[in-house]
Amino acid sequence: MKQFLYRIFCVIALFILIPIVFTFLIQGNGEHSIEDLQFVPKTETAESVLFQEDILPGILANEISMETETEAIKAQAVIARTNCLRALEQGEDLPEGLTKGEMIRIWGQENFSEYYSQLENAVEATKGIAMVYRESENGAIEEVSPQKPAEDSVSPEQPEASSQTIGYIRADFHKCSAGYTRDAAEIYEKETYPYLKSADSRMDLSAEDFLKVVFYTKEQFVEKGGELFSEETRTTISEKTAEELLSQISVTKQDSAGYITEIEIDKTVHSGEEVRLLYGWNSSAFSLKEVDGEIRVVTKGLGHGLGVSLYSANELAKSGYSYKDILKYFYTEIEFVTQYD
Image (tube, rainbow, N blue to C red; front, side):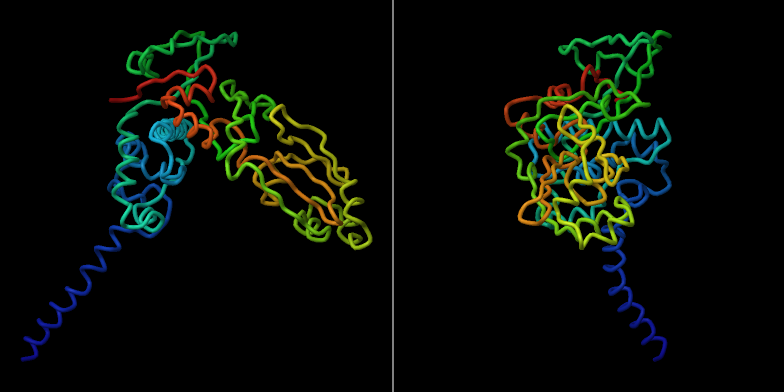
């Protein structure tokens, strides 16, 4: 009798545990590591994962909205692939992606199949295509004809002339610009990214995230800025007006796209990105002004402003641009190569 009851108990336990285990395997634990993306077995290496392209839908899901136009999604697929290949080449971390479980929680179970198929289709439509930049030792560019298909372009595996260098580009992107994307040469002194030049992105002016206004009391502004301000300023802020506080801040350098690259606060110079990240502002294209005893901060754009503006890319797709046209609009003198079949 006891043996019979024990068997009954085991059967009931199996019926309870099997759905729980199955659900856990499908949804994952929510982490962003390569092993947990749940597209391939954990025994595979990062390199083999990449060349199956199975992680790309998860990366795309983490980078764009599912309201994005098809050609803009394809453009982002090429961006993601290029950044993955560059990361592997340089021994860096791959871009973060979402697990299927996270996608279900964000999109809803009812939308998962449709949205995931859209991402898979974009990856398949651009299979193996990545962006590279070729430069000769004297800095001259050899441009590939725009009409030349990717499969006819030179692959990184083919031998190159010793006077040339070729490599995957750093495919930067951001939500929307301040009206023009930024020129990397105005930001970086020691590193060169000649394909990251300023592009007209005034389509961004109609973006919901283009303009943001935030108000601070003088106390809030100093408290949030913390070590940006001297100890004297922090301890005597109650004796100062907002206008007097702002007199201790001056923009010393700004790039051609309107982003602040250097700002002096209490006689110490900081980068615009450092300040905007500390305060949590949308971009370093910001302005400060005293209004009714408070400090008003106005930011333009969302993100660092380099490379592709996702909002403008989507607008270009709406107007008929192909994914390659979109990418060539924002990245100067690039070539498309097919890395693998």
